[in-house]
Image 1 (cartoon, one colour):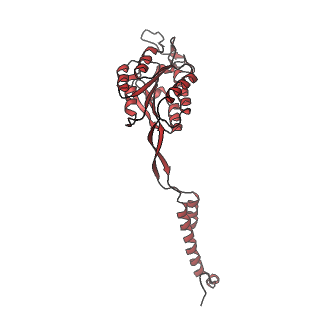
Image 2: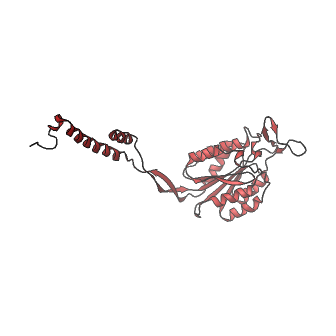
Length: 279
């Protein structure tokens, strides 16, 4: 039974532990700040502002090579959904999971989102750092301009993508109903390009309309390509080598022991010469 168990474990090819390796890469650091407030559910950009933004970011990642990316989501509050990484598959998974349910506190705290992005970059001051802010620009919570100035003072560039149209649209709540104000009128949410343009100007970046997805991707990737790629370290988790051979040796030793035990029990096998001549 022990021989059988050892052989089964060997066939399973067990791998013990994991190790971390430092890999040198050349690139920049990009943190996406994605608005997940209820106004992003408006479908003035079909299928909705949020879904268009998520699809756009996913396609944008496909155009990156060795740059690190991170994700901050925000509404009335902001939190780091994904720290900087070169694992683009994980990044796209996190982006696809972004929804208005992630943050209970409603609003659009753009300044808080920028501040969190600044604090989420690495401490490597030599690497070019970029914030890509994706929102409809309706800031209700804080001083976004002041936070943009502080980010720019640290050498961080800010690009903004405006999701929505000047005419705007209602905010769906489900069951064919829409958000209404205290007077019972349907609330219309509109793109605010003025604020986003000012933030981009302060951050030495560019404001881009988000209505044309592929134009946005092409424009941003061209802007990123202008930035110098600096060497940076990345941690990569790798497996140790396989340990199946340990259990093969255990099975081999047990087979030898079993053979000798069987030899003592069998009068026929006891007469056989295996490792030397019988006297």
